[in-house]
Length: 95
Image (cartoon, rainbow, N blue to C red):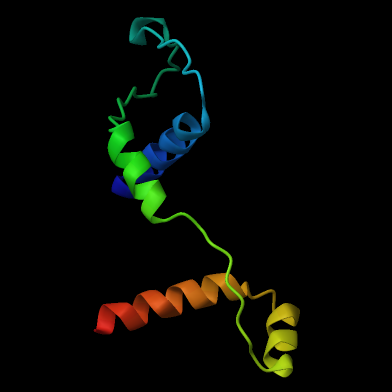
């Protein structure tokens, strides 16, 4: 449940972060629910979200790797930026 909750916060934060004008809030009493549905309020501190997004802003870097590794990664649909990012996170966590 917590994963879904955090995912909801991320989706809402991403939407609001990219908007210049926010939508009008909907009165919760006006939201139609199907029997068995449950309304969940997802709190979000947009200032905290903005701060976190700025810390995780993506930047382009150039790296050099052996051609054979690049070709094999392409064949296996491996995203090199993801591998590099996760490897750096693990390396930095070990320090």
